[in-house]
Every structure is written in structure tokens, then in C-alpha cells.
Image (cartoon, rainbow, N blue to C red; front, top):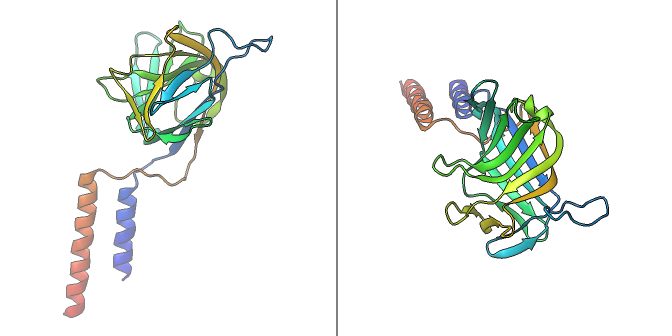
Length: 233
């Protein structure tokens, strides 16, 4: 019995990815960009729809969950550098409409350049054929030093949200296709917030590679068969 219990624990250790540390990243957009006089900035606000249901200047929060050991380094010329984390899951909560999970695979991208005052984070598609930005980009000085392996935030900055043709690369969610549109302008400017929280020791939803899992299960089966034969002898 002890041997079986040990084998089960071994399989559990293999199923959990070694060194996996969950990280939660959020983008919070107020929906509008008020000026000192209280009026909305002419280049502020967000207009769009999800599943055909429109929203105008609606606050929303994008939440992305990944693991720090998923980080990929993107080397650049000179002092340029970048990283990205492919998300295990992501969702968007839109005021008065609800919360919806992204079906389209996504990632959070961090870029830092000496030509830019600070580092920039964006929420993008992860498909290599259509790696278009979905939301961003938010730029602050501390982000230039962030490594995507630690917590940071809240970082408040102006987002420069550009809108691409969603007929080329539609963003699918459980609520339908998500569309950000500003037909009169290609870019909007809102003061938004980004934060990232690393949770060491928290449960992870990642699993081992199929080959590793099969080896572990096969080994457990052989061990159980050996114990059964030994007891019958």
C-alpha cells in the first residue's frame, strides 16, 4: 500500500510542471478619459461590441493567467529587449454586459527600448500567423525594468489602443466575437492600469507533456501489477 501511495505521489509530481509559478495580470480601463474640466477627452473612450451587443465608454477589466516559466525572451537590436507570456486562460469583464472567457489564444507582451520612455505591455493574440494586439499599449518607467517573473503594480499610464480589422483575425470569446472599434479614429487614449501578481506555491492548472504523463502512468501500472503478483505468491 505504501508503495502505491508513493507511486501516486510521484505521478502527481510529474503532472505538475516543475517550477511552475502562477502569475495573474490585469488591464483595467475606465472606459473614458476625462479632462480637468470633467469632459471626456476627444481621443478617449472605448466603443465596441461583444457577440453583437454594443458598448460605449464602458469600463472593462482584462484578466490573464499564466506561469512564469512560460516566459519567452525576445532579443532585440542594441539595448532593446522583450518578453512574452502565453496565457493559460484570459477573460474580459465589461460593465453591464458580464464576464467572458477568451477562446482565441492570447499572450501578454512586454517591450523595452532605450528610445521609449519606459516599458510597454500589451494584450495580444498568440497565434504566430496573426499576432495582433487586442488591447494596449500601456507604458511606464518601472515596466522598463520588469522581468515578467515578479509582481508589479499598479502601473498607471496612457494606453494607445489601436484597432485592427477584426474580419482578418476575429477575437473569439464565450460571449461571441469581441470588437473594439473607433471608425473615426485609429487610436484612442485612456489612462488605464496594469498590475501583475505572482503567487508562489499556488495551485497550477498546467499539466505535464503527454509523453511524460504516459511514462508516469505506465510506471504506476507496472508497480501495481508487481505488488499484486507478489501478494498472490
